[in-house]
Image (cartoon, rainbow, N blue to C red; front, side, top):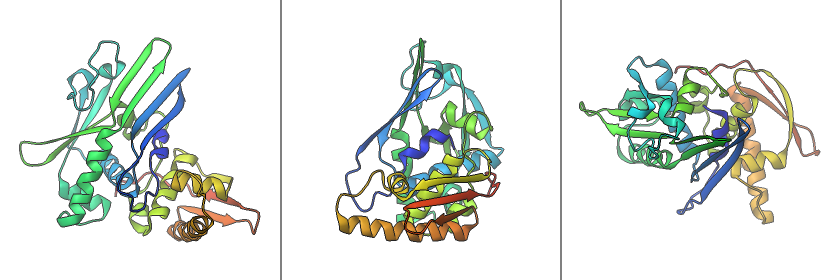
Length: 267
């Protein structure tokens, strides 16, 4: 997964109306702007499933950007460098995606996966630096002639699949082991924070963990208390998975985190 995407995913609870999210990051002397609806742990799982399938599946093609569908690259002006970069087209099925996520390809579970696909398709990534301009949607899917799905993946994600650029190594096996939404979001963010396949140890405040898991700090004392309990349980889940070791330092409000050299897997 491209590292800069981790800030899109938070625990959203049962709220019906998801807020619009805009993230800005440094890029090539300029900045990358990521815009779209707020995404949750289910959306994260579907995106990771697509990328893991692309890594292991021989049924894909690389397509020049100028041949990508308008649903992936809506800005067709010659200045848009997205038209000059290859995009990966994954040939898959709804059943294969559901298996990778760890759910059934039927009923409400497939409806949930399909909604995640729709949300991911709304995400737009735009890079601006000097006279350079890149603008593309994150993914775009189309029904194939055989009833399967053809998922077009943006150039930035294509590079991550190919092991190029800044990417996070994430294991679908670990993702599926985790039970709670906070644990899945925490694992995804930690994978991006550590980046690539690097091991090592880092320190972070509990408040910063809350910001990354929930997208901000709670104002009400009761909500803060519930979140603290949920995050503590999420930390225990992630520790149990073996991907990270997270130790809370007494009452200091800080955690020390170390990572095994876990590579992105094809399972």
